[in-house]
Every structure is written in structure tokens, then in C-alpha cells.
Image (cartoon, rainbow, N blue to C red; front, side, top):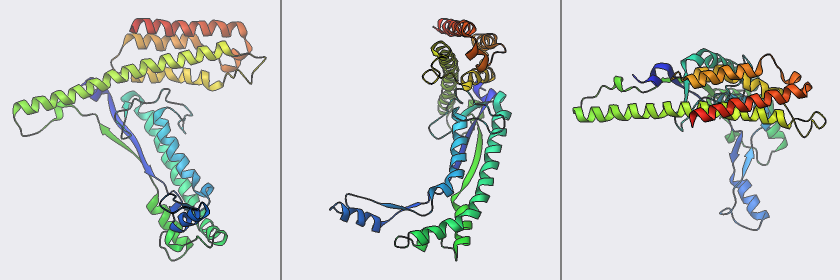
Length: 309
């Protein structure tokens, strides 16, 4: 069994939402007539409801996907996965270390709860939104554009039930020891080597991802401290999140350090030592300490760069 399959699983967020739009031949022909061309050169679509009415479920689904990438906070703990989870493929699967399993799955569960609550609100709001579309856009409105229900309430219920979905999936990382095929020894050996090679390559990529995340977060932190000018706050912003993300990086680094690299563990310890009990507010107020902390952060980044060179 590879180190990666022992210490991590795969996770992804899947889901769908209703666009609330539909291509329309009449719209395309109207645009073609306006611009003195033909529908061979223009296309057109119409809104079936006000986009604001259907925005919330899409926003939540997007936030859940972004959470795995490290671009949005978890709804339960308000924390980023700084740097995001390493990608496994181009189909939305991410490598989830066992040490982050509970944290990530609890937050994804809360995203799903929020999504389901938003669908309840949407189910209540859609009938009026469909009626408004019919009243304000009668020349383009068509009952065929909706779900085929007998009335607006039925259409709303069908749309929500059939067009919306949110789930998270887990899978094991392929392991050469699990291969069970009836074939020649040469074929089985080659297949096992391919599976192990892919897992080992991803393991190397996790290490690189972790190191790069530490370096980029440290450098951003140091640059933000050095550039901050209390006399010109608008042009030199130093946000609370700059400190928060660096502090939240520590448990993520430890979790992603699947191979137990002592250099990464030391980097995590050094980050804690640099931050101490400082906050963004205290760093903004103390110019001298701000300069000292920026220098220490750069030293940690330089040391890490040197040892990996």
C-alpha cells in the first residue's frame, strides 16, 4: 500500500442548479433584424425569472467547491483551507488527508444544509417569480419554458426537485495491492506499477503543493507588513485575513505533510513562533514590531527555500 492511499482519501463536491435562462429563436431573430443580419450570426436567450431569485443555491454550491480549493471559508469554523487541497485530477477530485477529514466533511455537511434551506426558500419564491416573468414579459413568456406543471406552484416544485442537487463524494485512492484481474503476470505487474507510479507522482505533488503554499503565504504576509503605511491605509491595506490565513496554514501544513517531512514540521513551528499571540490589529499599531515580524517571516521563507533547493 502506498503512503498516499494509507493517509488520504479523495473528495469532491458535485451538484447542479437551474440557470433560469433559455435560448430563444424569437430573440435571435429580433437581434438579427435589429443588426440587419441573420440568425446564422447571432443567438439569443431570455431570462425565465429574475436572476436574484435563484442566486442563493448557486452561490452556496460555488462556495462549497471553492472551499476545497481554499478560496472560501468553511461555514462552521469560518476557516480557510489555506492553499486548498491538492488536486487529484481534472474531474473535481481533491486529495483529502485523513487529518483534515473531520474538519472538511463537517463543513461540507453544513454547506449542504445551507443549500437545502435555500431550496426551501426558493420553492416558496419561484411561483411569484414565474408570474412576474409572465406579467412583465408577455411576448416572450411561454409555459413550455418551465417544467410542464399545471400551475406556477407545480412548476416551482418540479424545477427545484429536478434541476437542483448538492452532494459530496468520497473515494479511496487507488492502491496496487487491491488489483484483482485475471491476466498474465506481466500484465498485472505492469498495471500495479502504473497505479503505484501515479500515486507516488501525486504524493510528490502534494509535497510540492504544501511547500509552495507555505512560501507564498509567508511572502504575502511579509510583503503586506512591509508595505503597510498607517498614514496611507487605503493604498496599503493590511487585512485581518492576512494574519488569519497564515495562522490557519499551520494545521493544514501538518495535515498535508503526509510523508512526515521534518522540514515542513519545522516550518509550521517557525510560523507559530513568528506569529506568537499577535493579531492584525497589534501589528498595524506597532511599526517596530511589524518590521521585526516581516523580517522573521522572510527568514522562515528563505530557510525553507534553501533546504528544499
